[in-house]
Image (cartoon, rainbow, N blue to C red; front, side):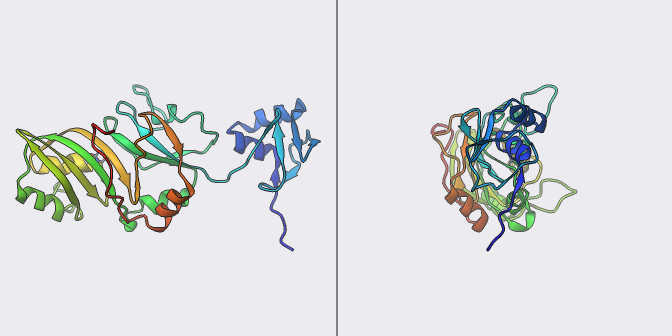
Length: 257
Ligand code: URA
């Protein structure tokens, strides 16, 4: 018979509720916790996630080792845990009950769109490792014009700095030119600093608006308001882990977003 894997009740409560262990212990001390209907006050009591029924303050407490969220990042917040000057993306997700949550990659302060959060290091690695070539699609608006030669240059790879190799092949679609402004979707497989802005700058365009619309096969859920988040579905997690480099090639522009 397979042995059940257990963990301490105080850790179970702290992790599942996103609380410090000391607060979990307070609930136990105040006799607010039952396991399978029995009152338990001892933090070291062993519980098996998934089979023991833990209830705290009359609410069932479900333990999940890993969590995965999609966030619609608004402009004006930084992808950092703390910042003296600006709000951080973590201010928006503080109600997610997870103490070791982190953002998968980063977006610039003025960039909007899809940002993932998790506490699963392997998931982060699967999406962020340069060796995996995961596609990230951005909708951009820029001042300037793009000739067919410049589009070809962006798609083949462009030099964005003397100290770096040219960018990896990329894809541009739905390029629209309106007088001296241009918009479109750019799909890249790297994650260099300010990469989209620098690529467009290299061909004489100045980005005025940037939004990430997809990571690999998963597009931003346009039902999510800016600043909103939701859990990734099991299917989205599967797609990201199994086919991370397959592109959604979807996404909407700013008017739809
Ligand atoms: N490229 C940029 O220039 N900025 C981002 O935030 C993401 C990609």
